[in-house]
Amino acid sequence: MDLTLLTYNIRKAVGLDRRRDPHRILDVITQADADVVVLQEADRRLGPRVAALPHQMIEQESDYAIVPLATNGVSLGSHGNAILVRRGIAFSSPFRIALPGLEPRGAVSVEIAGILRVFGCHLGLMRRYRHQQMHRLANELRPLPLPAVILGDFNEWSTHRGFEPLDRDFDIHAFGNSFHSSRPVAALDRLVISEGVKVREGHVLHTPLSRVASDHLPVWARVTISD
Image (tube, rainbow, N blue to C red; front, side, top):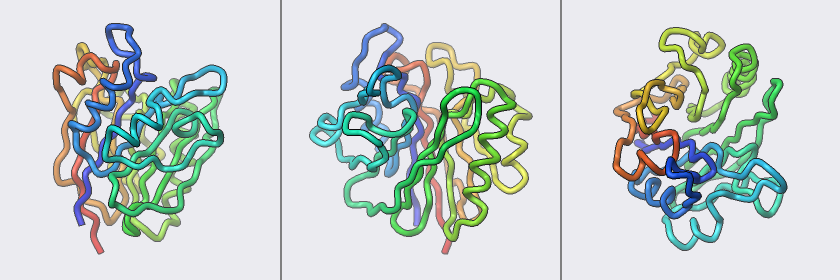
């Protein structure tokens, strides 16, 4: 079975013009036409962490269902990580993962169509803590009965190191520079896949809209899940 996946740091829906415009973000997402969308910075940082991409807008103006990951009634996800799934595709067993580190960080996960476990993450700014967070994610993946994919903003600028806790047992995929959207110089947004998942194609989405909607460009991939 093939699935299309998208990871996108939406910067709380604030674009390069400094306007908060969730409609613009949703347009970028719907134009990408992925089956599963993993978001970072999907909630505002302060106070009750209100969703930057409102529930009602997603429900009324898109073909996506929101995976229930929030611990309150106003956020879209957990620690800003959220997952959307195309309506008609079954999903189950959503859960949140606490990640170690100096900054408050977390990850989220959901099972898709009974064949794939998808994780979303936004890792820390310091490599020492990113490594701790990767070890935590690796420990979640190794005992899983299903193939798995981690998508997200890994905050790793290096092209040849930084993924040591994951690269022995999992494949790391970068499809091009996704940050900064005005002049992309780093592949911060990536996919990590387990055995049983094969990447068919992938690319960074450069469109006039995506170049102004956030400071990150979205990354799209098509994967095949083996039996």
